[in-house]
Length: 170
Image (cartoon, rainbow, N blue to C red):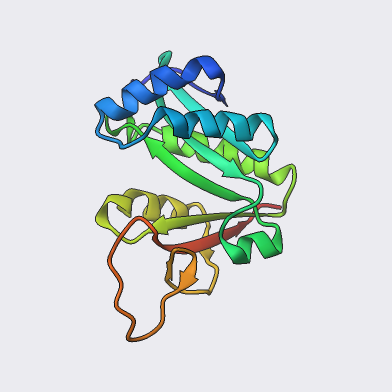
């Protein structure tokens, strides 16, 4: 996967190829998830951008127009969400191209783009990418299930623990 990179919106016929590649690479994704994403895209609630390298599925991300994260929702900041690049396709510009297109799409409707990342080491590459792209923490601190974590609180590290960032696009 080093040649042509194509970025486009998800179509119904893409789901099986996406799911197969993701599950083969160890991602815990399901058909019903992508069916929901497609319904939400059709309804105008979400955009699902897919990357293909040399004609093969390489990754995807989604843009949610009305975020579940309260500070983004209240400020009408769209959220880049569920961003995944296959391990064998990483460090080849695919994530960058997906983010370029996501920011272009978001900029048509908003001055700001929002994104969150988890605290585990598996989020390390994403953490670096977002900071290098100019995203800065929104100032609300560490969140768990979209609620602030308070001093002294005991929590379990999970995919629901995140720091959220924003970027001014224009």
